[in-house]
Length: 338
Image (cartoon, rainbow, N blue to C red; front, side, top):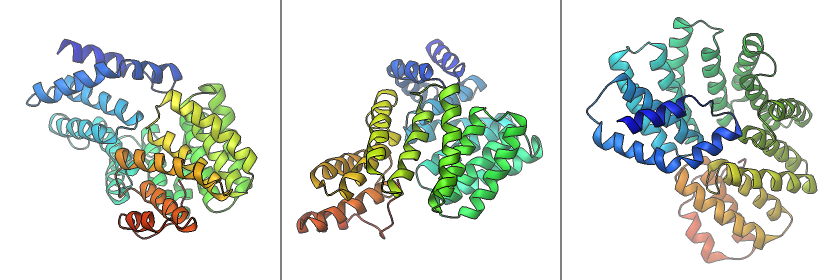
């Protein structure tokens, strides 16, 4: 119990925002795994506030490192305990609800995510107010789901609310404000409004680099998104240069199998594929597919996009046998985005 309390206390004191925090979490990950396994096997019957809060803290760490299954298990435990001890509408309970929704969104389970976000939003608006930073976090996160579903107008409406509220409550350069700026840019990118997207990405990037550093995962996410815009515009040389920077940074900061790292691997594969460098593209597609299937599951939209791209590549190169094998795992084809 003492080791559990020490580990979760130290992790809970971290913001999770700085590169140093990420590096520290990776360094102590064997200890995090050990105390998590011990908690689940030895403390399953205990329902103390320390245990549930510790489970929530561990869930945050696993989520940041792309381990969604473990994060969900810990958030579920925290939610069950908080509902019992604090009540279903307590702000801490709603925080666990919000984080579970975030995991479902990352797993591509958008309807489940929206149901939980709606619960969190209604509860937070009532308990905290419509302009509270926690309320605005849920507004921002709901917009991300609508964006993923292609409901861009709904997404923009929510992002505009979140951005106005965050700029007022937190300031224009706060990391949460910059996250909404970055997310709005993604919608404009999807709509083909590339100049608007680049303008917002540049604002987010300047803020990230100043607040968090040039190698922080959030900084790298915006650079990756800028590369996607250049990719859509056919600026291959700019794209590959940015992707190489992002890939090296993400492999170092997050690991080679993190979902964000695999997003960049997939992006590089798309460029090589379009250039006709099929061998390079093939190796990267296969790496992205294996990693995404393991981390996200075969039914996740990102995994399916990778399968679809790999099928198209084999069709163009006349690899009929590989096509048939992959098509058996493929759902309705979608245009690759991530």
